[in-house]
Amino acid sequence: MQGEREAAPFRPYPPGTQPAYDVPGYGSTHKRHPQEPLVQLPHTVTESIGPHFSSAHFPPIPDLSLVDGKPALGERIIVHGRITDEDGRPVSNTIVEIWQANASGRYQHPGDQHDAPIDPNFRGEGRVYTDDQGWYRFTSIKPGAYPWRNHHNAWRPNHIHFSFFGSGFAARLITQMYFPGDPLLALDPIFLSIPDQGARNRLVCALDMTVTEPEWALGYRFDVVLRGREATPMES
Amino acid sequence: MPSATSSQTIGPFWHLIEHPEWADLTRFGAAGSKVTLSGSITDGDGNPVTDAAVELWQSDPPSDESFPGFGRCRTDQRGEFRFTTIKPGPVPGRGNAQQAPHFAIALHARGLLKALMTRAYFEGDPLNETDQLLSAVEDPRRRGTLLARPEGKDRWRLDIRLQRGPHGETETVFLDI
Ligand SMILES: [Fe+3]
Image 1 (tube, rainbow over the protein chains, first blue to last red):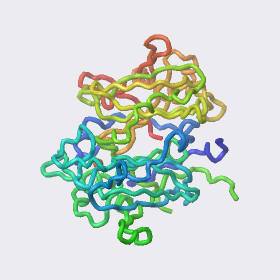
Image 2: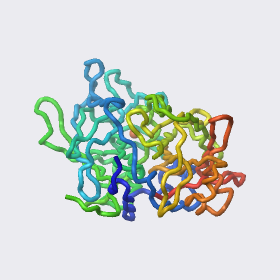
Image 3: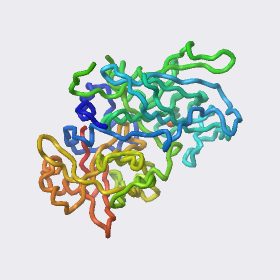
Image 4: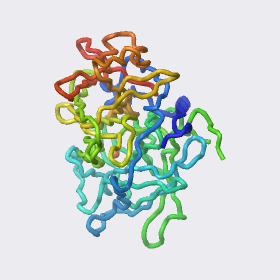
């Protein structure tokens, strides 16, 4: 399964494009960030290959907006996008995990104490796979903003959580997708933890009328780039 | 081409994608010697981290339909996690070197804006002496944070500290990969 290309190490992340562990504006980092320097580990087979998920063992959940055929409350949306690596190659047949709050900004989770209604018809979890060209797509409900206790009157911008695996464990990525024009973004220490403004703004999806369905749902596009390999192999 | 997409925290509500059976990597009928890896995660105050997603990945035995090679486990109210898997063998390192048997571990939690990466080796394995990563960690106390300890037959334990403790407890070695 793993040829030469699969075993090539991944490139380092460009400076400023990833958040630090210690971010003073985000209080939960205070007691959870490492204080010792990280130990450099040149990639070995353990880092340069990764898990493969089969849809037989991990079945797709492409629609979060229905439970038992009953529609969730809120603004129905279709989210799609393309997953490529830093060299522009599509990341095909890779698993995408999705989770989010409902339209009221409430997670169906015992730890969520926000006084907003649970929606029994909203499924908070999704799971889809990219096609041969790296495209993924799912249907959901636009999540609501919700308060958190980071600082006085703190509210998270509307967001959807995503998890990606790509082709090697060193490319593992968990992130959040935001919505265009959200005024809470400028106040959010989690969004602002990414130093590079251009990289940060790539977490904001775009309204996409090509997937918007008349009388049905607004469409949004969110493209994702996973780490590229260090050595460019001989190809094609 | 744009650089890789930025990481954001998994947050406190990731249990919406939790499937407890993922902590058992042998559930699809994998052949091989079963082991458990359990442990705890504590923060800089020594308090248990009760909302983490602990991910385990091993490049050996090779993953296939009967063995995913990957598992995920929550930490509970005591900060404890537990995996059941197949014991890995040695895998190639850089050059002609062999690496001692190990698991790769990724930690995700509220307060971690990107994953914390570490490894779990097996204390007492003779290949540990020549393993490239273990050899690169000179302080024996720090090196010890990468060694799971036997707790009985086929049961191993690794306690993880995100920061130096209030009484000088050693911070786990985290990796820049
Ligand atoms: Fe959230």
